[in-house]
Amino acid sequence: MHESWKPFLKTEFSKPYFAELSKFLHSEYETKTIFPSKTQVFRAFSTSLDDVKVVILGQDPYHTPGVADGLAFSISARNNYMPPSLINIYKEIDSDLGRHNNKSGNLLAWQKQGVLLLNNVLTVEAHKAGSHRGRGWEEFTEAVIKYLNSEKENLVFILWGRDARSKKKLIDESKHLILESAHPSPLSAYNGFFGSKPFSKTNKYLEEHGKEAISW
Image: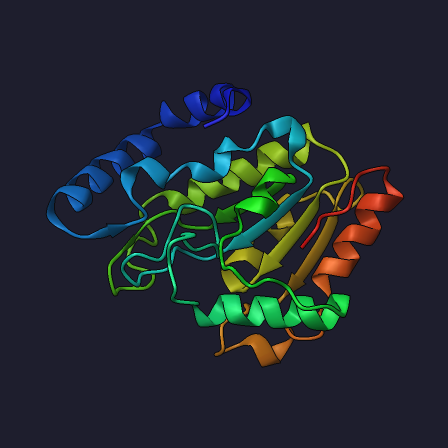
């Protein structure tokens, strides 16, 4: 994780809820197959706090073996499997921006441009979507959103899905832009994700506030 996040993370790690979460995770990683790997759980925080311009909030990591890489919606560069949600994200990029993305599935390039790719829940058991919900990660993510809301200005918060949209109340809309829609999952993408144009709207806002657009 980047040095700039350490004061915030140190505070959260010292709280009782996180002690309980850590105990739970230790047992889970010892006895079950959990994604992402231990070394990648906090990978989203390798982006400098100073560089963060956009926050994309998802649900929980991919639960298919070998896919989750610690960044929301991203997959390992070595992986040939393209999750349906990511396929739909690329479809919306193509439609929104009028071009064809390289569709590698690895979103590290977004992170390097200041996109914080954060899930509402940071871990999951193999083949069991939502299996680590209600264990403390939601409280952690809420603290992250509150911290970004107070410490930064003119961020773009992209909230995909019910879990992400529940965090809207934590964001000051007079300081930041909120873009919300259905989740890109095939189960919900046609309920408002397709056609929402989050990528062009994000870049327009960033440029209006003197920031460099994201190369999606």
